[in-house]
Image (cartoon, rainbow, N blue to C red):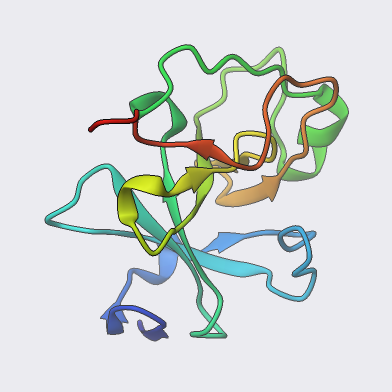
Length: 145
């Protein structure tokens, strides 16, 4: 299946890889179908691309690639509508959305609202963490790097 993307132009994706976001993303309740697009030359970064609207695209990372001490607790009730059973054997991925800065090394990650994806059911949800020490603007690179 071919989709238009904001940053990569036309991209072919496997239709079976389309992720359903029943509630959309925060502030984008009508954006319900996304694809994760790998960047071949930059393995730590991916795009979360709305498959219907090429202008809705987010650069995302696996937070543990940059924040090894990232420690979150996902509330069970928030995981239900993407069919994640807290006591079950779930296959999931967690991403954080990056805010790019004009100077790339000053870009930040939103650790307060991770994107959780149930890989088996192909469903996702962005979850705002309660009582969290994290913010929406954590520098992804240490100063001097």
